[in-house]
Image (cartoon, rainbow, N blue to C red; front, side, top):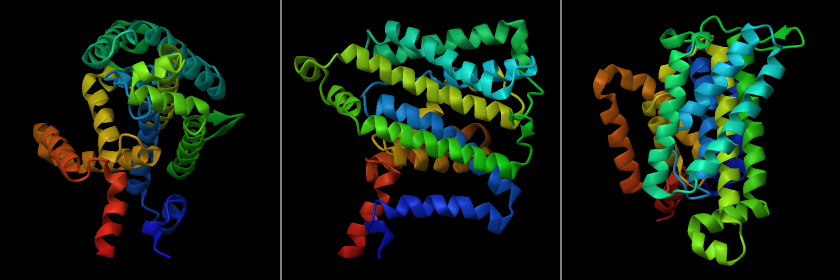
Length: 312
């Protein structure tokens, strides 16, 4: 059976490879990179719901990612159990996302992008100047996750922990997309006026989509900070939000599988693009241009293109 022709079998085999890979290779660097990529995948899946399936735009999701990290890190350092801190951080960021959505989603297009940047800058400035966050130096010595006395200390254990979170997040979003809510979101993405004429409460669904996407960003932030043990205000910057946006487009703007592909591709690329120093943004820009020209549906469409080429 050709794996390129079976859309159901191929993702399962890739997941199986990710599960088995660290046991076979025993490569700490590879484990580290997959942890990074899987963490970012969670942000990108949430962004894909908002951008790809709802047709909106956000250039401020790094702020919600960083805020989730700061909240969880500070609470655990203060003595709160990790599961409670994680839950409160996600709920707190989701509530903020809901409030922000009620304000900024009354705009659209370029105005929405600018509004999301403004919100992100405000959050970043507040965190940078707040004493309890560590200020410009960032939050340090954040403890690893601990579940009822069991700490996730090794990279291998964290690898499977983050991979599990990514898979659960994928199926939650897949359920949303395949439900009537998903149909409504895609109707909004296609034509807001037509969706409204069909009785779909457009504004309510847009706020819902934005809130869910910020919750996923917060979850990723929590996973990030308890793995690194450190977070600084730069992680909330516009450059990180732009990187998230590029991951969405490169992977495939309307695909959850594409979200994961984009996050993994750019995470590994960014590691090697550091050799270009200040010119690494040119690498990202060039890759994005190539993808748009030759794979407008993103890297997720590459197997389809290859299948067509093989069948000729």
